[in-house]
Length: 147
Image (cartoon, rainbow, N blue to C red; front, side, top):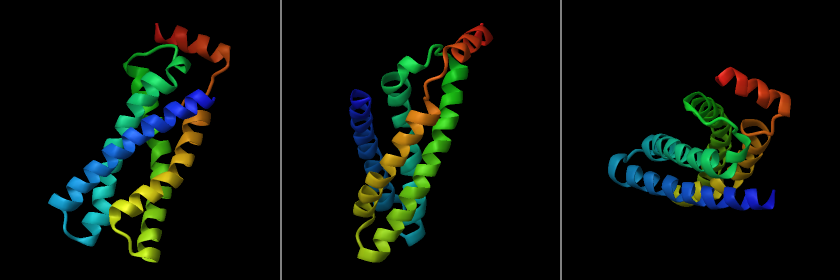
């Protein structure tokens, strides 16, 4: 589990770089309003980072738990991964806005602090729900259904 968590941290650091870069681009060059900078830009950067994190999760971190890799399993896992990340996103946004209100920090700093907190939520959901270990009988049924 420690190796998996280390992979998770590495992938999320890359996702954080992607998230922060996209947020910076949108908050610097696209939006100038509060709603644009603190609501729309973080939402866009979040979705780009979610897809980046999913690719790492599906093909690297939890790949051994996915016995059949095809379009159906990819889309299915992406769907549930995105839902779990939306829950993490809600946590992120609550803390991002809370930090902005409490400390008056720039959106980039608020985002980084909020990502630290929401990362714990995201790992837990991925480990125990999205990519949870299935009993062998369930895997066998899935194998038969995919034929």
